[in-house]
Amino acid sequence: MASHNNIKVHEHSFVAPTSLTQTASLPLTFFDLFWIRNQPVERIFFFSFHSQSHSSFFFEKVVPNLKTSLSHALQHFFPLAGKIVWPCDFKKPIIHYTPGDAVSFVVAESDADFNHVLSNTPHETAVSRSLIPHLESSDSHASVISLQITLFPNRGFSIGISAHHAVLDGKSSTLFLKAWAFLCQTNNEELSSSSLVPELVPFFERTVIKEPTELGARIHDWTEVLSKLFPHKSNDGRSLKILPSQPKIVDTVRATFVLTRVDLDKIKKRVLSKWDDLNGGESSNSKPKTLSTFVITCAYTLVCIAKAIKGVQKERQKFAFGFTVDCRNRLEPPIPENYCGNCVWGQLVDTDPLDFIKEEGVVIVAKSIYNKIKKLDEGVFQGADKAHGRYIALAKEGVEVMGIAGSNRFGVYGIDFGWGKPSKVEITSVDRGLTFGFTESKDGKGGVEVGLVLNKHEMDLFDTFFHGGLCDD
Image (cartoon, rainbow, N blue to C red):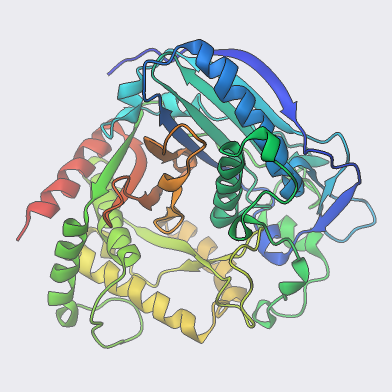
């Protein structure tokens, strides 16, 4: 499976917002601060040349257009060009933009096999990792986004983005990418500060976010809170340096798996047929008429992952599942869909640690996820004050928490910078934990794509469970 993976950097420049001459600041909300030292969210968009385009086309047309449109996009999304800082007289960090602040923009070239990278079959994790830019952070400040544009000579190019999770959730970063792509398709002569269509204009007003009473008394000392969330022997709670979390590169592979609409319906039918025969979760909701794509995809994928890991490493058999929920329409009152910032909250599914490896694990886990989602109607922050303790207890029991990144509702395969829609979209940062990536399928027919990183033997077993389960009656 060995392949070339050499990266040649042609340029490292910085792109600033167009005509933004004043300093500006934006506070971080409690939604943002819980991600302040977490690893960034990293994604890669691959675009194929639709004709035999030479490198000159990339350097003379693609790169300049991407740069110019990025500068105009940052005019609308100015916080992305700024930095996270924590002034000594402030109780919590802020995003601060100063004229001259800019986004790191790397132009590189790869000799990797473009067809191999685009395929869903397993390939070396290091290939994708080389297409992602570094996001700068230190004790005193942190960048918000960084970008890397990589040429695959005569075949296509990729756009790799690293985004700080304390500033952008998945929906917000996708909004930015859609705005950038929209402006990239606009003629330079037509670009102006009012060029964006209304649905792509970000909403940055932070006063719409109210700290929930379920978190206890209103938090006044974020230094203390962050010290507990991110314990570190040399940390006074005010450090903004992203905590180290090395990606799993050695002896691991990355692969993409597809569940078609037919596959999803088949799994759904099977789960519902056994709904009343098996327990799952704490509540006893009556059998639903249908199940969401999210519930079905998560249950099926998580069980395949757990069984694959246990099949290779017998001692690893206790698992849990946590996911984030978009709170924009769950707050009271709801906030705009184009709110740009974090508005997601973590949820831990009520499962027994051994549920994922049971014979009917898909049914049991699907019921647990469904019941958890139904309970969100009672309040998305319910039990939030106990969540940290629950995670600590699971870790002490040797339970591994699996997660999910992305959404099939983001519409990432519709992002077109002017040279066609993506040939593939990858959530690269799933290589930092036991997490799988989740997007809509490229063909637009209602299916989904699942991306994950496992060691080679685990991936082989996952493939067997994943495809074997779809053949069952």
